[in-house]
Image 1 (cartoon, rainbow, N blue to C red):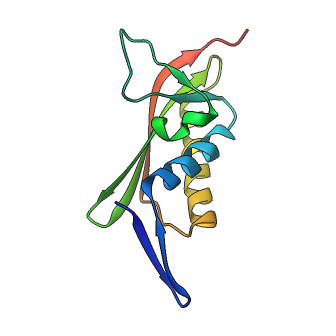
Image 2: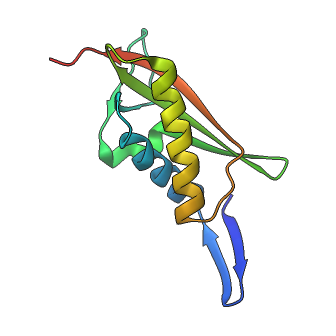
Length: 119
């Protein structure tokens, strides 16, 4: 469901895929995040690490009662504090979506689907 913003110059339609890509790229800038995980292809407890081409596959944008909710499925780096990484991602995603698009994001849910040991 595209989001519609009205300005004095006209209407702007923003798709959920656009919001998902912006949220995913904002999350990847945070320390401790290895990458996005596929939310649909979790098999045998192994999360598939997605590249930059597939950012929207690791992000789900939902609209509930006129509120914008974002779910991020991530893989974190071994040795980082997961709660701090998640908090930093939540803050960054909210800031970027508010700054770039002007959206008020109500909640950003983080689903840690794996820990990657970097070599």
